[in-house]
Length: 111
Image 1 (cartoon, rainbow, N blue to C red):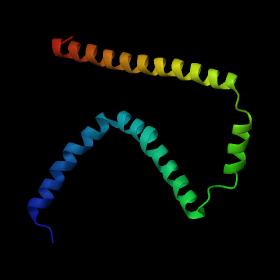
Image 2 (image 1 turned 135 degrees about the horizontal axis):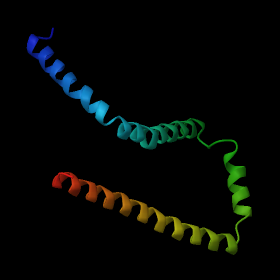
Image 3 (image 1 turned 120 degrees about the horizontal axis):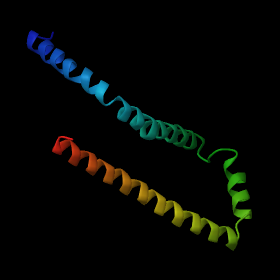
């Protein structure tokens, strides 16, 4: 079914892939845990909601309880927390990008 050239290409790809996977396993694990796993959970919940056509039995009571506790003080607290977390997130991203640039420059310089 497959000729010898196909098997040579497949073996070549395998020789490339094994070291690459070893080198990038931490990043791939973080990608799996940080993106794929939450996406799978969200998909499973969305499928359940779609099947039941009305949500979960605990959905409406939970939303009503949250709505009953709403007040202007909690709104102000939420806005303050959002501003702080947004600033912290931007600082973390900037520091990661900054460190990456420094490490790249050092590797180019041979240090």
